[in-house]
Image (cartoon, rainbow, N blue to C red):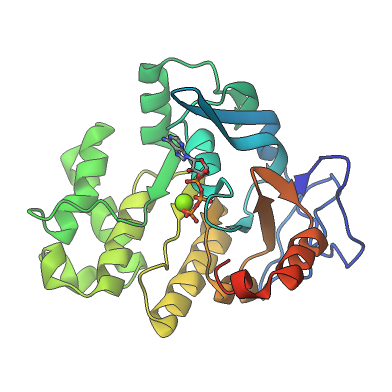
Length: 280
Ligand SMILES: Nc1ncnc2c1ncn2[C@@H]1O[C@H](COP(=O)(O)OP(=O)(O)OP(=O)(O)O)[C@@H](O)[C@H]1O
Ligand SMILES: [Mg+2]
């Protein structure tokens, strides 16, 4: 992963280079088993701005984001509440439109696509994991996952095979017939992961996926994501406040007030305001 704002690298060691461009040097080295080959970037943004307007008030949620993310990277997106994490994920996943700038995903410029093209693209290429999970309460784990495959028009026999494959992959095959309310938070989270994987996405966008989990279950989830990224060579970008992620991800991307900053800049700010550090 690289970012380009004219003020990158802090010289603390960018050991894990997954693509040809210089990396954002963070103190977080490659997690175990983080060896992949260099590949073309799957996400590139150029001077990305998202300004919300509330009456006369302008809220610049993203202020010129320049990013390059390669295939098979497992990245965390950190920043204080309101720093723009969800906004960035939404823009990259085509759920929100930037006011200015470019977004290329898998080499395609998505910022100017219309809604129907975006919807089709999302269904086939992107897996979302939202903090609220978004599982349908009346449906079993199996049905929640299978629904995604119905939406992309997969044949029934293939749907069954793929649904069970995904539930097994996240370790809840035995819970296929259970509804969300009959499962623990961690199990529900796994259903949401299985659903995000079902369409063989190249890109998984997760918004605070461990936010509601205890630390043990959170670790299991982070490890599971790591395994999925390694085995399936997908790219995963995960907004999080969870300090445990540093042990698992390849790199941490820091956001401050809608801008990408270096780890040194990010930590310097936390040093100045230690009371708020615990919240990031
Ligand atoms: N739909 C919206 N309308 C107006 N302002 C918004 C909207 N969505 C987000 N914002 C503002 O944009 C900024 C970035 O919000 P965002 O949700 O991306 O932050 P975040 O980093 O995800 O925060 P958190 O950690 O609390 O989830 C905030 O100032 C927020 O109030
Ligand atoms: Mg958010």
